[in-house]
Image (tube, rainbow, N blue to C red; front, side, top):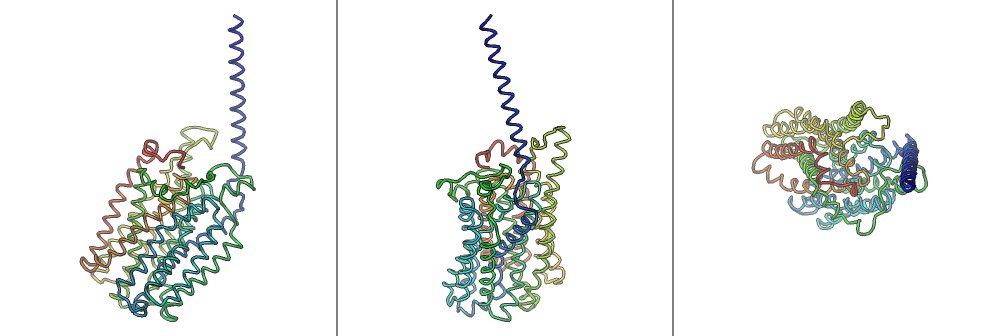
Length: 483
């Protein structure tokens, strides 16, 4: 009997101790959740997003600014059309590879050093382009230029994830994505007039000056935002803080291998088809404006304002819509669970994909209409209208897909964005090289139709993620250790 009472007393003590431990843990969680997600003020965060978006503009701007002058460059360097096309392809291939390296570096040493170093490299590459006297030298300088400009393609999304919680991240990403998406539109516009009035070399001198300005901003204005580094000196919520990486973890091949997970593979496939179509359309438009509609080099660049305005509308509205979808999903779950602890409510990442079909449907319809308008040389006004919807649909869809992948990998936001950039840029390099052959053999209409069906196939496959994504992640990964 005494032994029984002793065991009962021990069990009771264990239960009390467990209860106290649970209560203490609960209080600690509550205390952690009372801390700010980020110590930056609202104005500081807006400033960080604007600088990041402006820096993110550099890569697509550098890629596209000299397109209107490409014929002049070809003649000045005494090369062929096929040869000069390699200055585009080499840039895009480098834009696919280097963000993987930059994203690992940004997760290791922080965002600020990466921005500063990359802008220094970009500025040097731009000077090299301006001074090039041969095709080989120009291609080499374009690779250096691309290597420097591509850092923010991945590190920028990590910066947004550093300073904004999940429920506010979509709106911030909408502003950030304005940079990468407006570049293909503003590049030909700015480069067209510079090349026409000052010569193609001044296109690269202007980029070098811009790179120098961004280097100064990175050094003296932009603060460090990496959550692991910031948490050492400021009290912030202990969430989405990536662990310190070992040398073994800093392997871009491991990042690329995330496509072994079905949700990642299907998302990357849609990203690639979507961006490849958008990028090919952007590079092909000067051929239509100058060759079919007989516009000058400057006026051809001016036509890109149509898709640029569409990008602004699609990016800002798309980010806001995804945030509203998450808020609505949370309210529905709270009402169903009747939970007093809001932090216990887990919203699936797939909730951000709810409105994706709006943007991509708009994009695909505009693409196929654009191809056949140009094929039959119909009104230029009609082409400009559909270009607006191409830009709006593309930017809107980018918010859903980009935000979804960041939600799936909250502590690896920069690295998963680098992977996304790798696959979409790789396909863009391929389709850009294929398009001239497609255009010559099957014409504008059928070339755009082929791209329409490739994007449609990717969209249909993506519905598996939209409706079964959470189950796929639970069964096939990625697991918590990779998030």
